[in-house]
Image (cartoon, rainbow, N blue to C red):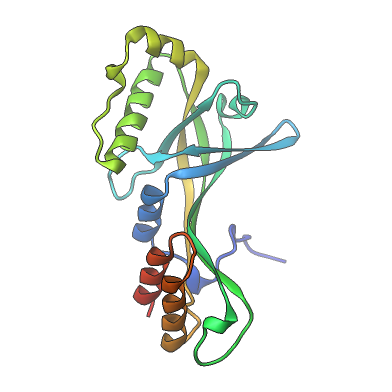
Amino acid sequence: MTGKIQRPYVPPLYRAGDAETRDLVRAYPLATIMTSRRGTMDATQTPLFFESDADDCSTVIGHIARINPQAEDVMEPGPMLAVFNGPSAYVSPEWYVEDEDVPTWIYQAVHLRGEIEPVGGADMRSLMEDIVRLSERRIGGTWRLDRISEADIARMMPRIVGFRVHIEALTGISKMEQTRSIRNRNGVAGALERGREIGRDVLAGLLSKSV
C-alpha cells in the first residue's frame, strides 16, 4: 500500500465543507478527547471551543479535572484526537419508498487532530474566563466567573488542568443518505418526524437540505 492513509475514512460524498464542519463543532462542543501515552489510551468528555470567531481559527481550548489520570497527557505537549458527535439516527429499510435495502445510520461528526499546548499559571484564569464566556454565549446567558468569590476561584483553579490544541486536521462527516433518491430521502425524513429518535426534527431538516 502506498500513499498517505486517510484518517478518518470518509467517502468524498459524506465529507462536510469547512464552514459546515466548524458550525458542527460550535453546535456540539462536547468532545471526546483521546490521547495515547505511557503505553495506554485514555478518553475524556469535555467541551472544546474555538479560541476566536475567525473563519480560519486554528486553536481550540478546554480543560479537565486534575485528578483525572489523563491530565498527565494534557500537561505536556503531544498529539490529541478529539471527536465531536452531532445528531444521529438508525434508518430502517422499511422507510424507503422505492426499494428496500439494508439498515444503516445517518449521522454527523467531526474529528479534530492537533498538538496540545498546556496552559497553566496566570494564563489559567484567562482561559477559564474564556471557556465560561463561550459556554454562556451558546445559551444566551450572561454568567461570569467573577460572580463567585476570589477565594472560591482560588480553590477551584488547582483542581483543573487547562490546555490549547493547535489544529492540524479538522474533518467533518455528514452522512445524510446522499446515495439515495429524493423519494427515499423524503421517506426517511417523514419516518423520522413520526418516530422517537432524539434529534429527529434536526435530522429530517438535514435530509431535506441534502436533496
